[in-house]
Image 1 (tube, rainbow, N blue to C red):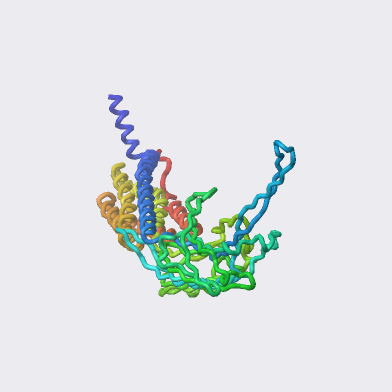
Image 2: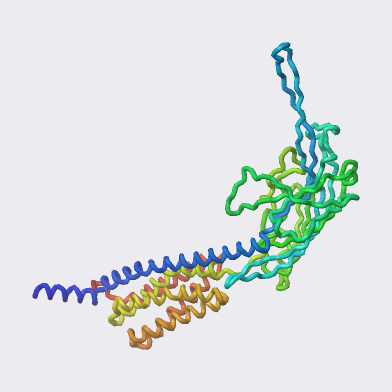
Amino acid sequence: METIKKNKGFGNWIRTSITARMLMIGFLILVLLIPLIYIKELIRERSERQQDVVFEVGNLWGTEVLLMGPILKVPYKTYSESTKIDSETKKSIVERKTHMNYAYFLPNNLIIDANVDAIKKERGIYETSVFSSEMVFKGNFDIPDFGQKDILPEDVVWEKASIIIKSSNLKGIKNQIEMQLGDSKISFLPRYRQQQNQSYGPNYVSMHELESPFLSEGALPKLGPIGFNTAITINGSSKIRFVPVGKNTELHMSSNWKDPSFTGNFLPEEDAEKSVTEDGFVANWKVLQINRQFEQSFFNILPDLKEFSFGTELLVPVDEYQKSERSAKYGYLVIALTFLVFFLIQTISKINIHSFQYLMIGIALLMFYTLLISISEHQNFLKAYVIASAAVVGLITLYSKSILKHRKFILLIFGSLTALYSFIFVIIQLESYALLVGSIGLFAILAMVMYASRKIDWNQS
C-alpha cells in the first residue's frame, strides 16, 4: 500500500509540479533537436545537388571565362661559359653554351568590347546562367625594351616571335581566332603547356594557351608601335573575367542579364550600378598600370596573373536553399518559444497538457522546414514560406482547439505563431540589420514573457 501511495504521489507531482513540466519540456526540446539536425543536413544536400547541376551544365555549355592577352612573346639568347681541363694536354678549355629564353611584353593599350548574351539553362528543378559573348580586342604593342636586361640586339631572335592568348575555356570558343597585327593577319592554335607548382584549391582556374605562328617582318614592333585587332566568340557560364594586361586597359561590357555581380580586383566606374535595369546592364572599367601590381614585361617566365582579374558574375537569383538554411537555424527558437507559450497557458489556466501533445506540436513545427524546402524548389521563397507557415500555424491552431478549449487561448496560439513566423521571415530577408532586428525582437519577446509570468506561483515545485 505504501508503494502504491508513493507511485501515486510521484505521478501527481509529474502532473502538477511546475518544475516537472519544465524538465519534461526541456527534454522534449532536446529530443526534437535530433530531427532538426537531419533537416539541416537535408537542406545542405539539396544545395550541393544544385551546385553539382550548375557544374554539369557549365561543363557541357562552357565553364567560366577568364582571358589574358594578347601578349608578345620574343625569344632571345643568353650565354654561359664553363672551364674544363684537358686530361692529355692539361690545358684549360673554355666552353661557351647558348641558351634560348623568352621575353613577354604586354600591350601598351588594350580596349575590350564585350557583349554578353545570357540565358537560363534548366535541368530538372534546378537552373543556372550560361552566356554567349562576342568580344573585340583592340590595342597596340610598343617597341620591346631589351636594354633593361642588357640583352644585345643581335641576341634577339625576332624571326621566332609570336603572340599568345591565355583562356580558361578553350571548349567554349566558337570561332577561329584571327588577329590583324600591323599589315599581317595571324591565326591561333592551342599549345600544350604542363602545369607546374599550381595550387589546386576550390577556386583554382586552369589557364590554357593559344599561340600564333612565328610573326612576319611586317607584324613586328621593331621600328614603332604595332596595332592589333581581333574578335572572339565564346560560350561560358557563371563568370566572365579579364586580366588587365594593357598599360592602359579599358573594358566595356553590356548584357541582357539583370542580376550582375561585379567581381575581381577592380570595380567598374561609379555609374555602373545605375545602369543595371530589368533589360540588362552596361558597365565600364578603366585600369591603369599604376593601379595593378605588375610591370609591362617579363623575362624567362610569364607569371600567373589571375589574381588581378576583374569582370562580372551572372547571378541566378535562386537563394532558396540559403534562406531555408537560415530559417532552420532559428528552429531551436521556434520550438522553444512555442512550447513556452503552451507552458504559460498550462500554468496560468491549470489546463493539463500531456507530454505526447507537446511532442505532436513539436513534430508539426519541424514539418514546416520540410514543407519549406520542398515547396521552394518549385515556387519562389515568399510563396513557399507563406504556404508552409500557414499550413503549420493552421494545424497547430486546430490541434490546440481540442487541448485548450477556451477561445482566447486558441487565438493566443494563432497570434503568437503568426507573429513568430513573420518575425523569422523579416530576419532572414535582412542582411545588414539582421542582428539588430533580431536582438530587438528577442528583447520584446523576453519582456512579454516576463510580463505574462509575473503572477505565476513558482513555489509549486
